[in-house]
Image 1 (cartoon, helix red, strand yellow):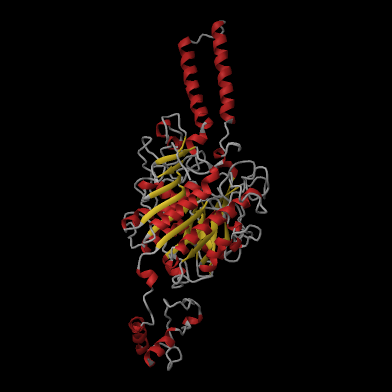
Image 2: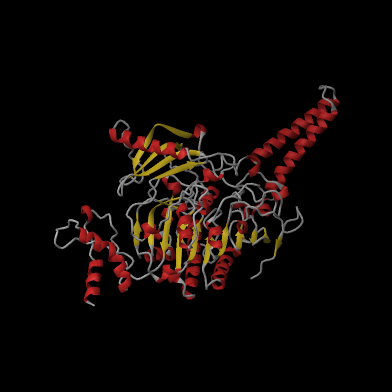
Length: 619
């Protein structure tokens, strides 16, 4: 007993290593700390080294350093991903006007990440990186100015079939895998039922949600997000041109063969018919609800979505409570049109935007309650984040209908701006991760891939680069610095910024390109849907702008470009960019050209095309 007591005392003593706090400070039972030799004033001796080498084994044998029961078996994994939620929209990140008690509860019971970064500032690219642990530029999911995200269910683009998701690996490890809510990574490739991009062909056993996204056209009373103004003008010009040709031919003012006029008229008519059918029936083409491969609502009934997703989540947890399971709850909230059920309308101080967040928080709370009721809390890793920063240009009819990105500049669609990519990130795992902890080191949504794969007993793919890093050592306090030395921030395929974690206390960020705000200094591109990534509406910084994010997170004071420190930091980052570029290889672009156009042959339809409407869902 005396030996055991002495070892316990030694295990609780913190070694003052080099006068710093490089070692973990947590007192969790899963930690042990080096101690000073009592006779040497802190200097190392051979006996000390031998003693410290066998200390973990002694602790394990005597039961002082027990194997954690929660980590001895594969944990359940519960992932929550909000859509367009800004870091400043959440109570535990400083918002005091929108109520998010359940998200705040997660933060109190777990680890809050304050330097959590999305791999892209828009939905499809960010979600592809989240699922694969790889930058979108490696998978062809970057988008471009005419197709920043996937635009149609009936487009052939999507998450490539040769990409490996964490769901696919966990399924191979015996996990039951489910996804509820938004997918937005494609459906079909060559026919309306090949489902090459569908969640069930990317590792999920169960899917209930929309393969696309929520957007204004899904609510009948809203103005379309894809207006036909240009096509209407083109159609009017075309009609006038055809009539002019016909009249000119009849009166013999022109000498064009009738055959040519007829061919041009038919070609033009088919062209405009295509566009008007595609856009005119968009709620039927894109706003659909699926259960696995079956369409159950077309168009979907928004009024039931919140309760349906909660119901499905609880049912999935109950079915798989004997575990292990992976459940990915991909919220439709808080994407425009911020559709909120009547029970939550008018409850917040921020119009529908705040109401929508509070409804999402309620949904999260209901699902967490189910985990508690099934007695699964201690063996479930829970994660909450947003796919990217809050949307600033989307306020229609109210100044409150936009996101808050806190102290950070920019927002959704601005790939290099901190407000577009710094997002809330919370992880909870009782008795494994510390409670009420804060980590301000660079982490990424891509880190979920290697983290959950390793926890689930899987192996990371060896045939490709995985950009995400295992977060567990950082979360548990075994290391005090992030595994990310550099992060690369793209807007479409253009490298806008790079982040460098130089030391435990210093993070630099260089900007090569940034958007021209409209009006100047507004922090967003009001008057357009998104800021652009290239061309005349961006600023090319020559020389680049350099910020020390550790003491200037709002990026207000760039370092002087004539200082020696500027040159040293910039050179280090430039060398990292060269190394990064050497790892990039050409891949098929999923969101370009014909891959991102409406193809009637690929249209998911619950009837016989074009008669695509049904409601098979009942409560």
